[in-house]
Image (cartoon, rainbow, N blue to C red):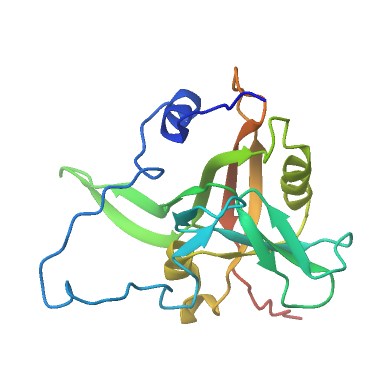
Length: 222
């Protein structure tokens, strides 16, 4: 069987319209008191790992793990193109490393602006900070030269969970795992898309759009 080679960076630009060095990062040497440290930082402040390995054993930076309900899993292990993760819990919960993820976070504020008579500008009243919007773009890559149907089905199963899901990533931990949010790492998936790609049948781009979900205590006034 002929060997097929392709560049993930080129595929990302072709699919999503801009370049990224995430698949071939250039790390500059930092000169300072810690530059001679023999080790590297493996985990973020909240415990999420900075590194993981894909199904072929290749290491990548900033993994994104989703925990979801999966009644079909009974052996405690689920494997995807992004790697494999141990369930580590009961009740049908599975953890899946999103394959080859590029993650970004956006935040907006709700601000009421009131014009002033006879003066330039407005009075700005900050109402609140809206939910964090989290976007993950990546590729599902089959281990063979065939369409990765199993992993696409897993992503569809995760999307169809009509409840809040848990997300683990060093980047999202900074914004979500805070005392003022009750330490909640819950998100709700708002949108799933599989952009078109041509010429490679064992690769499927995907995009997930999620919003943070914060628990609230409702008080009934009678």
